[in-house]
Length: 191
Image (cartoon, rainbow, N blue to C red; front, side):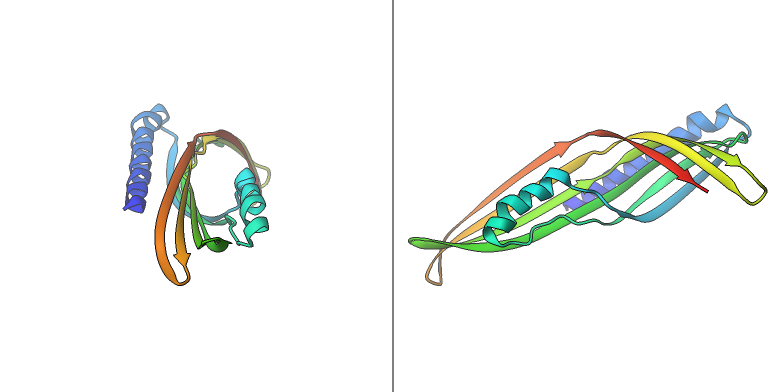
């Protein structure tokens, strides 16, 4: 159900972006071209402090293998291209990373089985200005920069089961989530 809400929010944003471009930017220039695209790419986030804390507090102490990894991201882009070689591009993509592991701790009178489930979701949104320079007939260079938001949500789930021998005595669950909306920059270049 949660992923359905994420997809619904994602496509609502894409539709809103497209409508804004059609209503406000295209009439501004009769020589502008509109390009719509869908893309899939490999996303390499560092996860910074999250992975450092997982290694320090869980992997080194309990021998788990909790680590968020990079992977495939998919998204859409809308690009308005002017005859002067200037382009304005709006991009939005979605990425999700999940890691799970468990460990056991013996503490009298019970044995604890602890299960961890961590999910990070991000839906970055960029707007960029790009300048396409034609150097020769078959060779061009483009340079650009953009600014965007990185709405990111981290969800943490932990379940601890207490056993006496092989009998489950009790169970407790804990959940937490954090959201952050940092702003970042991107620099573009290709030939």
